[in-house]
Amino acid sequence: MTQSFRITLLPGDGIGPEIMAVTLDVLKQVGSKLDLEFTFQEALIGGAAIDATGGPLPEETLTACRESDAILLAAIGGYKWDTLPRELRPETGLLGMRAGLGLFANLRPATILPQLIDASSLKREVVEGVDIMVVRELTGGIYFGKPKGVFTTETGEQRGVNTMAYTDSEIDRIGRVAFETAQKRGGKLCSVDKANVLEVSQLWRDRITAMSADYSDVELSHLYVDNAAMQLVRWPKQFDTIVTGNLFGDILSDAAAMLTGSIGMLPSASLGADGPGVFEPVHGSAPDIAGQDKANPLAQVLSAAMMLRYGLNQPQAADLIETSVLSVLDQGYRTGDIMAEGATLVGCQAMGEVLLKALA
Ligand code: NAD
Image (tube, rainbow, N blue to C red):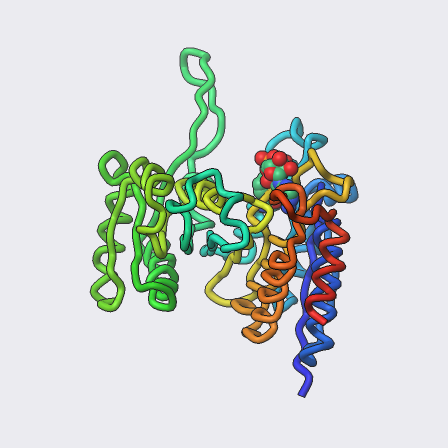
């Protein structure tokens, strides 16, 4: 029996529409091959939404997202909107969508593909075999804590304020996702905080430690965030699954991303307690190469694979996409960001074409 899924596509800004077009073709081909019926609807977010509606997250977009089975997002942002007031910036649309859909867990794999090992700026022996999953808390911490704002003090000075806060329940729910993710992987979980300085981090550490009693098959360790940053570049193979708060996760997941050599290869998933998840590449809208057919579409394509695996429970379709990506890399096709000696340089569209051939 044909299974049907409603997918909201959010191409966003910059290279977003280019990499989304490639991914849409891939999904259509996978659908027809495996008898999956996808209904796609496109909606506005970020700068594109600002230009069309005056705001970065129109109500219709949030409604479309809520009514779908999964959301595939490309990227938002660009120079054009950088000087707008914060509430009108593209990023505000992204944060609003995460909060509106209750997406509290962000899963970011950083896996070294043997075909791209030389794309890493670290030595081969340091990165060979690296396979890390960073589980980042996404709707709490300093990006959302109150009070926040720029206030005028009694002496007339301006004072910028943000608040890092986590409640028991916020820590416990991300902790559960992290322990369960570690169970499905190598059985090791490293919790990253700044408990030597921050009270909020001490609570984080206490809760995660208490939870570990329910997950005796997972080996739990703790690191301060500064040390975690060092260890990630010193000996990344020590990590299996990492769990951390919103701010630290934002930074560490980008550092982990760069172990692999290109941000253009990295997908991510953002999940809530129930309802649809959002699947998107780790990278931004790359305005410096937008409209030039230079973007690497593979992070977006691999995000579609994560959508099929984690959002729609279609592991066979996810496997098919991931195998095809490895196959085009094996055949030597590379976009500029992952170009290597002796490889065949292709643009975004051409990478899409060779992927479709590999899928067929
Ligand atoms: P970026 O990820 O867009 O770009 C960083 C560098 O990586 C650039 O040199 C870019 O050309 C390159 N790059 C990124 N993706 C690539 C791809 N698929 N193929 C080839 N090269 C790629 O980060 P940035 O420059 O810091 O930010 C640009 C804009 O994107 C900003 O407006 C920022 O706010 C926004 N942004 C959005 C998201 C998101 O939508 N989730 C995330 C990060 C940044």
